[in-house]
Length: 158
Image (cartoon, rainbow, N blue to C red; front, side, top):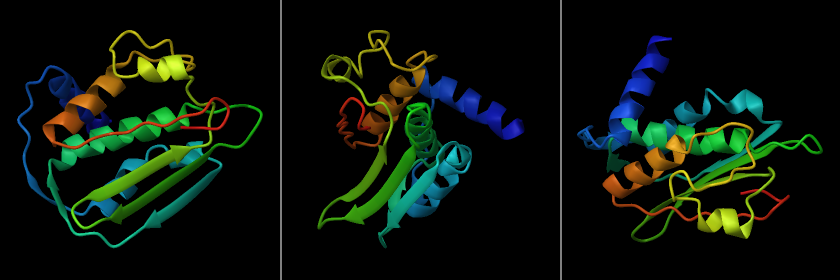
């Protein structure tokens, strides 16, 4: 409960833009494993491919919030008709570190995808959701000078 309360308070400060990021070296693969812990039982299968990557520089708490929100969204993308599978991969190119998080859920249609980052505009397929998670993801990504690409197909996943 204490960890949850701290996470909620931190997320609130991120959303208000009042949290000063604390840069440090981070093992991204370990951070992803830790971020997955809360939601991993929501998936029927988990496929991982963690390549050896150098430590990244960032705020571990903020990045954990980012990844937990992405994984939470994937967990909520379930369909009764099929098992929900989560795939997480990490790899590097010459100048970049990449993370892929994919689900086999209900997907997002083209119009919803266009509105994804517009707070309050998304007509989600999820039963509940405020858009705060997406807002936190966007703010944290911007503060870490990184990009997020979202690809999705209805009934195929995101």
